[in-house]
Amino acid sequence: MTEPVTRHVPVLADEVIRWLDPQPGQVLIDGTLGGGGHSRLLAERVGPTGRIYSLDRDRAAVEIAQKSLADVCVTPLWANYRDLKLVLRDIGIESIDGALIDIGLSSDQLADAARGFSFSADGPLDLRFDVSEGRPAGELVDKLGEQDLADLIFRYGEERYSRRIARAIVERRRESPLQSAGELADLVKRVVPRTLDAQRIHPATRTFQALRIAVNDELGALEAFLRDAPECVRRGGRVAVISFHSLEDRIVKEAFRNDARWEVVTKKPIVATEAEIARNPRARSAKLRVAVVGGLSRSPK
Ligand SMILES: C[S@@+](CC[C@H](N)C(=O)[O-])C[C@H]1O[C@@H](n2cnc3c(N)ncnc32)[C@H](O)[C@@H]1O
Image (cartoon, rainbow, N blue to C red):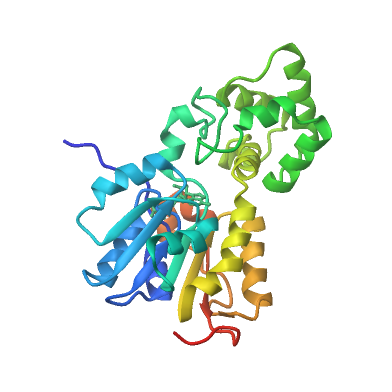
């Protein structure tokens, strides 16, 4: 039996199709290609006369999709969705019919021990989507002062034991630097109290999330995308954002509400059904918000 190309199961798949409402012949951006599940679904809707340009910062995801999605009208591109305007200029497109971003990391990245996303694997503490830019998480853990480390883990991880974790990291690194994802996960597990929450998620989940958000500047990328998308999507075109973190969801909610170029379509975020969560536990914290580009600042297509 051949190995499946991806382990990643796209979340809120039916809901994305229902709310983004792709039509035959449309040109869309999937800003987070990942395992290509959403891209394939969108491609089936736009059909052979349409096109999905699917971006990912992770070169490995793009290389896999070049083969696995060769049978549909998807063009995988190694790019950051924060550079949407540049990407469109490079491919020579003035405006698109809509866009999707499904933020965060994919199950394929989590499963790749060499990337350090998984606490159970002894990979290097890296956590970058694109290993060709920025600094690995190990460097932050090794160099940041205790207060800055605690603030980072509190802000991006919403971790209430951030101070305790930062203190333990600083004490530990006086002896020797933390080398691997597994070492950091064990340290966090030792210093945070066992709570009910710990039965549901690994105690290091929030710390890893905080470091990942920081090394990839994930919130900065989201803000840039939301600022630029109304200039790239035609009037009446839709943009869908799936987030997994309350900080991200707040950024999306406020941008859609406060920027006059957007008209919100989903008054409340769309969440997964119990049945989907049972099939795919990643869907538990997913929130989908959709808006139409419709403000008066844009001229019609
Ligand atoms: C949750 S997965 C997407 C899964 C995808 N929707 C699917 O159906 O398989 C998120 C992906 O977005 C990528 N990513 C994260 N931030 C990005 C950014 N700023 N620009 C482009 N890709 C990004 C990650 O490398 C990861 O592959």
